[in-house]
Length: 170
Image (tube, rainbow, N blue to C red; front, side, top):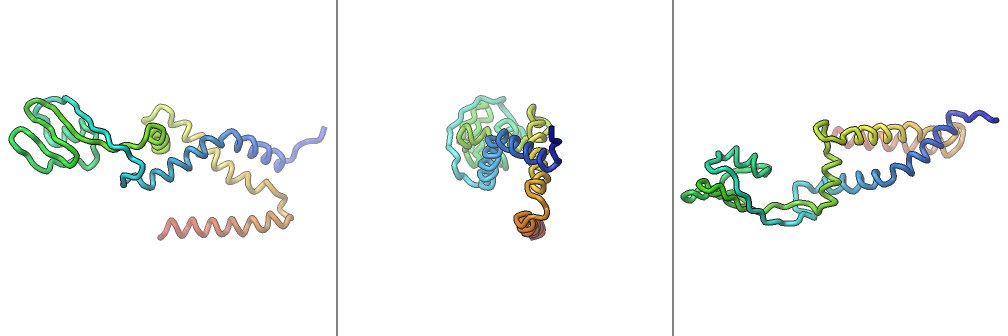
């Protein structure tokens, strides 16, 4: 029985890990692209929301309860506080506003993409990050170093590193 070389083992793991992670790589590619537009309304759907909150909330408390970024009261007319996307009745606690959210699946994808250690499945992001790092390293075992394609690949690697540094420092 012939012993497998490190290069052969790396290619095998690279191949099957690539197939295994194809779906999640597509999800991260899509959600990463969508996140570029998070400060716009691109792909977002408008939804009217009516909630009953505690009466007499301060501006800060109201912003936290409604989970609205950049919340600020623009004016007050009697018991009604007006803000950019709706109103809040100080006496009754009735809030009426519009929110703009991504469609369900895209919203779930971007939530996973932005997960932190407070999220229950953050370890999946760690696994995925380590897997991507493995892909980077194992790429250099895909072809023998003496081959023309490997040497050409090193030029592409140098170009990619140069682009990375440009993006980091521009």
